[in-house]
Each structure stands twice: as structure tokens, then as C-alpha cells.
Length: 246
Length: 246
DNA sequence: GGAACCTTAACGCAGCGTCAGCGTAT
DNA sequence: AATACGCTGACGCTGCGTTAAGGTTC
Image (cartoon, rainbow over all chains, first blue to last red; front, top):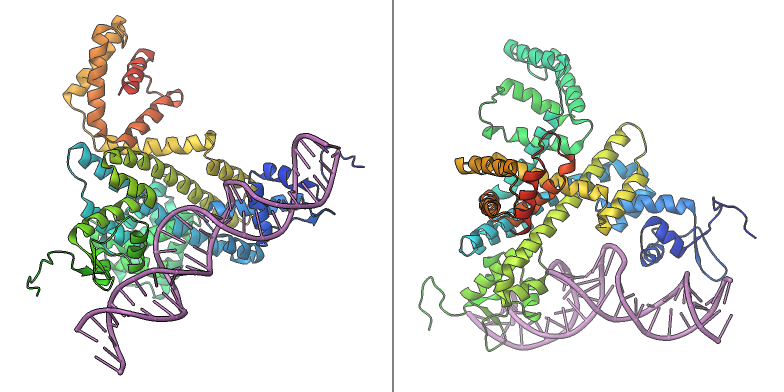
């Protein structure tokens, strides 16, 4: 009755074959069906689920979104409203970054405990407990901020290594310094042009990476602790404006 | 009846005060009580839970162990058998490292998708899906290993930056090279002494950090891809023996 | 006697794994 | 008639949050 050799035309995969094809379990597929996340294209007379190629494409999207940590309900939402995808993913990136920060803290705690025990001491339960409760509460206390800052610095440095500044960039810095020296602020007429040039440069630097943008923002907002890299308050003002309106 | 001003002597904290003291919710305390993880020292006549200082100490240990990702059942186990603590923590370190690796992969995936979308393209759903299923399965395929390797390299490099080699270390390397040149292998009589010196040096380098040891092992086992750092197969043999028997 | 505090019991949550009990295709 | 495959419940798991309905202390 069926003759096609390769391409199954319609909705020809039964659940087992389909699950192996996609690398998920059958139980998962039934679950997705029940909650309405991925309904098979058709059902056989006996009620067998019949999946198609389109189903596979959709399932792969689901897998990816699950991999980046989205809950199934949000996955359903973004698949229904693809316009919100960008935003959702960017938010997710932020979130994963924080998670990684906490993981790093936990790993560091383990290292410290390990070292203490190697030295025959008791681990500092109380100290770690304080850090832990703060981190769990998402408390923006010193410790936590420090970690986010570290992560942010790491990212900015990484990017900077892979980056080679163009002549434009140097000219921009020169022009901004000159403007500051003349007393032109970022909201003056020539200043606004500089701000927009700065934004362009930043966009090139970040490559449209919002996490990197956040990182830069974080690092710059910590300028109090920057040692010798004083840009001067005038230049700083340019940065602030460029950042806020970007 | 009670007169002590500061130090509550016996079991004087009721649940609310105690929860605030420790930074956990009352519900959590009740939960721990029910599952037998942390029973209050006493109960009042009316059945109120009464916690003591010892309870606080134990709770802090629990908090720490939870922070590093141990499930409550395992926490109960290691608190009952403190001898297994070392091992448990080391295993946990390994596990968290892997988790962080997967998080990094997810973040990278997000970055790639973000870049694709910025360029007006569709994200590579299928490609990411493959990676995702492999990572989820803990599949020791290329990708996965690559990530573990990257992490391992990062750790070794980090440590190396903070490390300054002593004269002993240089002498050790010289001696080993000499031994190899003479044809003495790691199982020869003089060779065994060198192996044990190497182990000592490694112990100093890792500071008793098993994750770092794993990292070194991983990086070294990938020697095929080391570019110019050829130690020569003779030296390599020393390393392998030292590593295996450490 | 009212406010603040305590108790137990029980449902809900996310994302499936894992039976159990029963049809279907071949 | 055996075997592999499919179906729908329904409970279990983790670590609590969150009512609900009621006692205790001051």
C-alpha cells in the first residue's frame, strides 16, 4: 500500500520511531501531547499517534528552548508568539548567567571546604551558610554583587581579547576627549552625534549580545573601584548617556 | 524563672525566632522536622517546637550542604556518617562542574541564536537540538568532551597563573629529562623516586583539589592536540604513572 | 478577649519515570 | 496465539509554598 522509499510523505511516524528520531522518550511525547505543547499531526483509527516532519521541526525547537532552561509553559507561549522570542531568550541568558554565578560560588565553597579538611580543620560551616542564604535569597549584598562583577569582568575581558580596535574607535575617543575639553556635554548638539557614534561602536563591540551589554554596564557602574583607568567625569557622562539610550 | 540576659541556655528558640536567626522559613523547619533531618531539641507542653544552639549548628551544616546541591536524603546520610563527607563533597564538585559546563553550553547556544537573529536569520534549531540531546544524555561525544576540556584548561591555567614554580620543580623536570635520556623508565629503581617526587609536586600544585587533578588528567590525556608542548613520550610515561598511582 | 503565635493536614508545582491494565497490528 | 507495539490513567519524586482549620500565650 505504501511505496515511497525514503521520504515519508504525510504523518507516518509512530511514536516509537519518532521518539528515537528526535532523541526523546515516548513518555515525553505523550506528556507534550497531553499538555498541548506538541500534538501529533494525526491519529490512526485505533488512536495511535502519527507524527510528521513538521512535528519533528517543532519538537526540535522545543528541545532547544528546554535546553536553555525555559519551562514548558513559556515554550508554548513563545511558539505561539514568535515575536517575543528575542526578548525571552535575552532574559533567559541573564538568568542562566546568574545561575552559573551561583554554581561557581558553590564550587568555590566546595574547594574551600576541601582545603580546610585537607588541613585537618573543620569547614567554616557558619561562614558558608551565611553566603549560601544570601545567594539563595538573591540578596544584592556585597558577596553576590562581587560574583556578578567577576563574571561580568570575565566576559568583557574575553571579548576584548578577541577584539581589535579600528581607526574609527581611536578617532572616536579622541573626538570625545576633545569635546569634553571644550566643555561640550553629551546633550549638546555635537555631543549627541558623538553619543550615537559611541553607540555604534558599542554595538560592534558587543555584536548584539545583550549579556555582554549588561556586563559592560555592570563593570562601568563599578567605576569607583577602577584603579588607574580614570576616564574623567566628562567622558563618563558620555558613556552613561550612550548606555541608557541604547 | 529565667534570668540569663543573652545566652539562652537550653532550648529556648521558638520556631519563628529560630527561622529568622538561621535565614530559613518556618515551613522549611517543619519540613526538616517531619522528614527527620532536623528535629528540635525539645517540645513545649503545648507541642511548640523548641530549638537550641546545637540545632542551629546542625542547621547551618544542612544549609551549606544544600547550597552545594546535595539532596536532603544525602545530607541526612552524611550527617549520620561524617566519614563519607570528603568523598561526597568531591563527587559533588565533579557534578557541579559538569552542570556548569552544560550551563555554559546553553549560554553559548543562546548567544549563537541571538547573533543569528540579529543577522535576520533563523536560529539553527536542528543543530542546537542535537547538541542539547547529547548534553542531556551525558553522551561522551565530541562536543561534550570539548566542553569539559575547555573547562579543565581554564582551571589549570588559572591555577598556573597563581603558581610560581620553585627551584625543586625545575630540578625535578631536569632530573626526569635526564633519566629519560639515560633510558630509565618510570618503573626503574631511580625512576620510582622521580615518580614520587612528581606526585609531591603535583600535590603542591593542586593543593589537594581533586577537581583540579581531574582537570590536569583531562588536559594531559588530550596531549594529541597539544601544539608545541611536546614533552616527549618518555616524560609522558612518567606522568601517566604518577597520575595513575596518585 | 483580641493579637500574635503555634500546631497538623493536605493540595500544588514541573517534568516526566514507572507501573498497571487493557486494546491492536501482524 | 504469541509478540511487539500502542493507549489511558494514576502514583511517585523534590522541596518546600500556600491555604485551611484550629489550639496557645500574653
